[in-house]
Image (tube, rainbow, N blue to C red):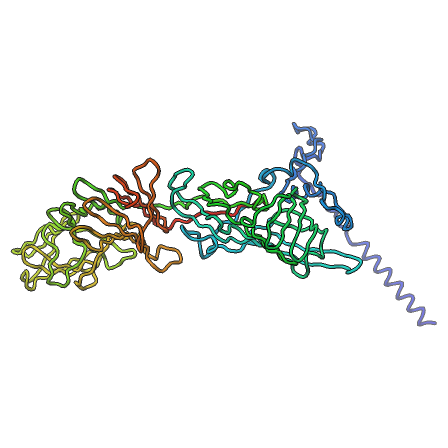
Length: 585
């Protein structure tokens, strides 16, 4: 008992001690209220605002405007159509589409934003005279999200239970190329996107995976940007009735197609139908030339053959590129060549004398070819000659003139018409062992001095004199190469190097002849370029696949491709064709 009493007394003492300590602890100070800054007119009015604001604080802010997207528009249009049960759909031979003018317009342009897929790939852009399918062949939902979107079909019948299958759509570009020539309708010489008569323009594929169309009669399916009901299907036919379009489409294998009960010949629409597959190829009903800034539908008498109003093909023209001019300028009895080099130096060179035909002029020559060896002294006093730095791509060309050979002082006097005159010292006896070194752009050109004021020179700086032909390398790396000169013609090539051409391992050449009568552009074979004459104009025009424009003027003859003055606008980069698959999405 005594121990119990002691324990109770000890516990009571501890409780009293705890209460005493708690009474000595100071009370915590309550936190100050947080003050939030108010904005005048935010709809939450304080007493201060009511006294100081000049605006009515009781006016609430206007709600944010609702942004209507293309998906909202489509959803709204689709909501106008009655939703049938599967049983009702089968009974409806022609589901009712509300007669709303909004659904009857020719184009969706007023409803949906216009998007497009440019005919170009990461490794290939569309060049002149290049087929579209060489650049981009197959398009799917990844390129045209709404127009070519896929989906799933589901049905549930008492006999067979639930069924499901996925479907996808594809579009293929089968032909078409941008060329330069005469448009027959406008009689303009220009570029245009050409589809020849009976060429396959577009191919559509609708592919069902994991089922057949017959299983899903009465169900909705997307086809080329519109919703349809599958009204009927078999192994050789498919009938689609529009929901978001008033159109009804009937396809039969290897037969004509029907659009709203109008027959479309299989010369225009090639149809292949199976139980799970639909392919339609749209053929060009005639030659179609799509001019820059226009679309395929502008040239179709019946645009409905495209099977949708949400697709088109635009041609926007060629890409722009800076260019330099190469001029062959004809005088009374001579030609001058005017070029800009890679050093941005303009040379006006006496190219040819016409009667008798001679390189240079009637008094001096233009030397473009080395002698056969060091003892073949082809450059005479007053002659012009070409030298390069032993590079054809990104090379440097200078035109020099031998003014005088001073045998007494062992000096050669040269002139660069773009700069000034200068001397070069030679040693040895002319015609025997006299040599000199001409250094231009840090490249040494070996010279051998002959008798009678003449020299033999290494024109291209390769260290050898052996009959090499030296081209003129222009700004932008085009080359003007004189191939040969005879008594009746001078043969010249305009060369676009392969390094400038996309995905090409060969140079592009255009050959021309200078005769006593003028200039002739080669018309057929390797090195040819087709020239066209615009109605009522004394001008012939031609364009290479690279995009270099040839303009031949003066007394022109389209059949022979002859004229007097030639201007070549050679771009510094290749020009490409801008073709866009336009869609309303």
